[in-house]
Length: 314
Image (cartoon, rainbow, N blue to C red; front, top):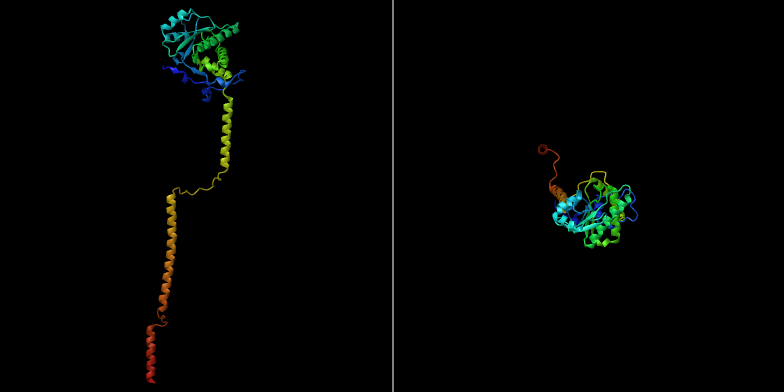
């Protein structure tokens, strides 16, 4: 698997924005703040593939490797890691030591020894687990390391309840960042098993809640946009209740249609004028013609002949 850089691991700010992480179902703890949300990150996967400054190994007291995450880190780093760990002389519960990373993509490995959970005296287990997270963070700052990734410490075969361990981790990291905010760029929680995934998904919002001010601003902006849209809609004309005539959207075509209409009107006027002139001319010609005879021409000739004969007889 290709290494994953610290920059590619999503911060809580991004997870909230993408709706991949929900706000807490109950009231956040006292002093909870979103100011560290850009510095806290969460990813589910294999811690040995992270290209960060340091990964934290849930080691045993010998530091020579074991099962679970501890064995995976030693296998990925190579034999040289065990050789260096052998020189460290082991480590006490609640404390941490640092080595090179060898074949791992990270720069350093911080080995911390978590407690075996004591359900009779859980406060002792909690104190030791806090020591694991605090000493690991202190080592990172001491060596100038800016990005650090934690695996689930003591939640495997050591039997620490995942939800309780997660609360200790979140509270300890928050307390450290409150005092050393600028000394670390990113603290990454790495989960693998479902029980750890659920624990971090529900616990992180209690200690690092989403930025409520940003949420309020976003809601106000949405309300303003809705009000503006409503005001604009009120100025629009009513929707017609009959089918509109299709508008002619081509200006040039509109001009042509107007010109044709004007030409038709002009042609109509010219036609009427011509017709009037023709009527006037016909009337003038008719006035010069002889009157139309009221009798048949043949009858007129007969009558004229009879009158002539009568005259001759007289």
